[in-house]
Image: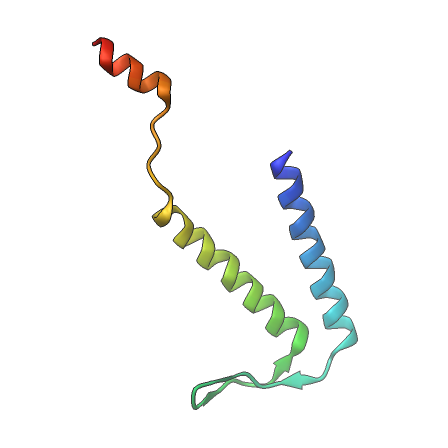
Length: 80
């Protein structure tokens, strides 16, 4: 069930980005501190930001998950 929910959220993002890209074809520049990017359409900029966020969370999330040992595995170690 969780995989279906995640797939629906991802599909909604893709549809939203496609709709936004089709409606907003005007180029924009992204500024970060004193740096300026090339001019790209809003939809493409949003797609890159969403993809970077997904990849970043896929890398960072496993680093912060605690190592869990199932109770049945702990019980087996006690009996050995």
